[in-house]
Picture 1: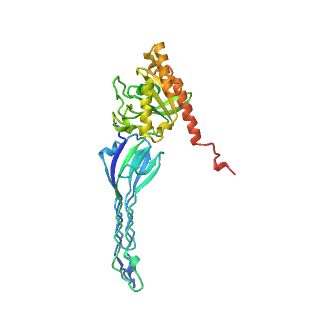
Picture 2: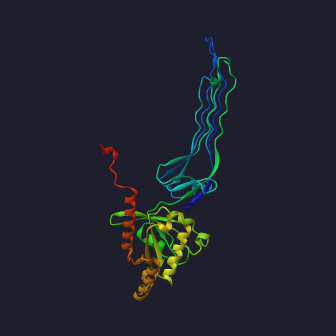
Picture 3: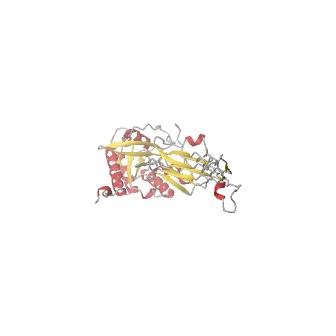
Length: 344
């Protein structure tokens, strides 16, 4: 299945049904009168977050969605049925934006969340509503109100606990494959990862979700390379794992390059807790390790981890550091408040 994290769709809610012009005519009934029913309301357009989806690829092949028109009113005071709704089913983490792709409409972060994107038009009144003492046989009814029509953007931001960032070929996909069941593409050339990937890691009977995104290069915020469009997938993470390849001639410079792109992107990424690791450590001898660790430590201002996803060196230590940060963030987000059902 292909990965698609942005799509433009066109929606239209249903028109309201027209009211009816009808008069009561029954045998042995002396007095008749208007009995035209109201039109039914037009269908709404909803967006709903559901389980089992992790891409917006369905909206590449269908972009137009239209709810049904309400049924027209009928005689004998029968109101028309409501038009059928349309529900856009999307992955958890999807945001809906106005046509300008900047104004946020809604953000669906939990399974089952729904939002009405376009309300159906009201049904028109039948002629029974227009009966008065001086107009006892009205011969008019209202048409239904038109539905709403608009274009919206759907943008998916993956929901994960930890995010992997770094230059291309920093070992992010190798680390993801080593600690989760994910099977990302791994090769010895830049930009092997073209789409974000997710995996569930477990350590000390605790688990958390890791998101891997394509590598960043200098000028990514200006569109260089793949650009920074995939950074949105780590906006929701609680901690970042910044991997710097041991094969870099100057690890400190490589670290600062990525940090500069995170700061240029904004949206709070640069302020997130960060764990720094020198990856692919199995390619270095003891002297080279010491030299490159010192370079990375000066740039990052913290002692980096030494990591090799191939040999397993340092993997558990990094996972424990990540889960500790994730756990601390979870506790801050959900304070220990007693359940109101048990408070008397």
